[in-house]
Image (cartoon, rainbow, N blue to C red):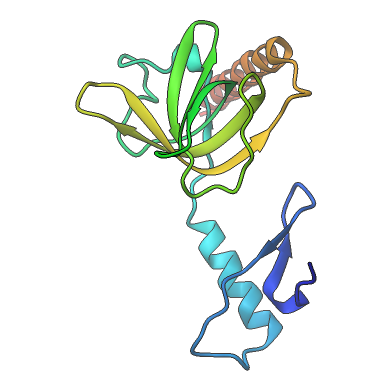
Length: 164
């Protein structure tokens, strides 16, 4: 499928992403189109890295509208509602995938970025805006690296506080 260069961007995973054209201005220059895309991308929060076991009602990440990045194996998927359930280490999370174009397979490993919505039963539902298959990822190594990243960030903050 060919895309016009003025309406596509190459995302960080080397995939072409087609921009929605502005129907009012078909003769806009490439630079204006790209700056509009950059501005809208700047307003989208990055997802905080969260392990499913950490995502419970006492977690600081368990907030209405929190932007999260979660990883887990697909336990089940309901085609009618587009709700997927992922699991890791005994914890599960429902993920609304209605805005994704992703072929989901039970037992495969997926990573989703989206906003958390707390349902009336106090369970979380992640409304995914990004999803990808990460079958090659070693979950244990991923979790170890996440712990090291958090330790590094904590050490950096402590170091900055000591300098003040």
